[in-house]
Length: 208
Image (tube, rainbow, N blue to C red; front, side):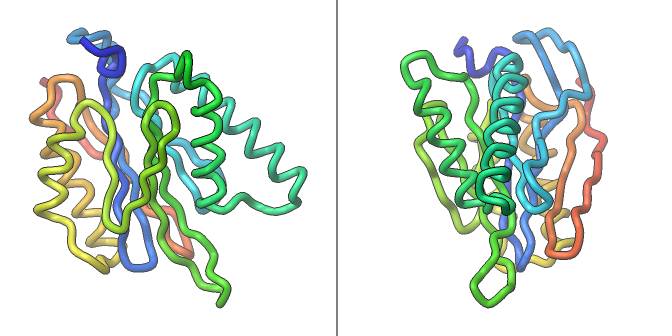
């Protein structure tokens, strides 16, 4: 078994019309043994940027604190909030610095970036465990159920989904994909980021 699959867990981010969603399951396991059904993998970076950290649970905690420190340092130095694109490169460089003894995490980022006209445009990205960035216009996935997430998302996602439809799409994608993966599941949490607010909902899933 790969060390990436040891604790299980999956994350997906999706683009909508002027909104973006990021969701993960809530299972923490030790291989096939379930340990917790309320393990958080998605963390707020700013009011408009969230990061999901699927992979080894100890590295989730380590990287969350490291990103929090680096984002705070950026905010103090630059005297402004970090933009999603900048944060993606910060994540990439942090992981690449440790490429010879990497963190076993494949981060997924989602947020709304400011446009020169003053509006917001959705942004999603993911990296591998040494920080190779993958930008997408539709969705990005990571974790033990990533192959199943790709399949379901390809079938359900449509361009320009409104916030409520995006929530429904990402929820159905995640719940149906993790049902086909033994190391993910046990409920889910979904964050939908719009320019006005962030909607967070916890979903019940199969507990078997």
